[in-house]
Amino acid sequence: MTKSPFRYFKTSPEIIQLAVMMYVRFLLSLRTVEDLLHERGIDICHESIRTWVDRFGPIFAGKIRTKRASYIRQPTQWQWHLDEVFMKINGVQHYRWRAVDHEDEVLESYVTKTRDKQAALTFLKKAMKRYGNPEVIVTDRLRSYGAAMKIIGNIDRHEVGRHLNNRVESSHLPFRRRERAMSRFRRISNLQKFVSTHASFHNHFNLDRQLNHRSTFKSMRNAALSEWGGLLTG
Image (cartoon, rainbow, N blue to C red; front, side, top):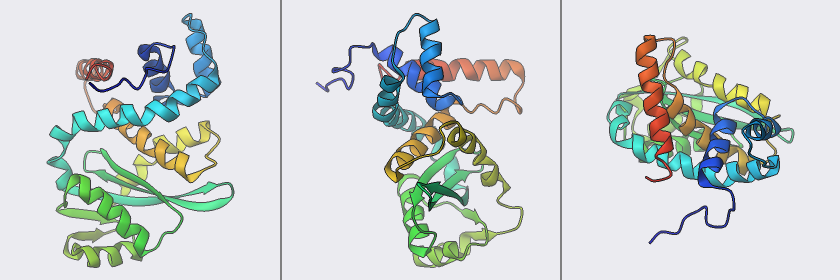
């Protein structure tokens, strides 16, 4: 029998799950989440919430990825959009690589200290190991992508254009807002863990509100919340 990851915690798993969801999904600080829980009669220190996010965030994210894998695997093999953004950790420049599919599903997030061919190659291999080889890969004009594509053998599937990669450029915005709310990061390991967790949460709760009819959106939102609540028993 698998041991419960909550066995050493006095707080109920439902409260832990709620706190993690509020912090990762919304632009809230740890103390704001503490205040919101206190309003609901739950007396929890913000440092406890920090511990829960660090420990259980990746667990919940892994369960989300497992549940979604069966019905997103085939579409993600059609077209990918790749891009990288600059991020500073303790004043040192780092790069967050990101791959999304044609429906804005975040496939992979990877943090490196360099922006060269080896970093691009490692990022591509991680994404392809999980999702397979796509038919088209769209990137910007960074030469590291082309060099990595030659090694993998995907150079004929590589497309580069000025406006072709707007989809992934826009997909950076939710995490940029989350980063500002958190006053940035201090360690690369914490950044890598959080970008992976945030990507899974974003995929689960991103329902394209602006594209769907109100009734469709409400139905999808209820389904997402119902599936989220079932993670503890799944």
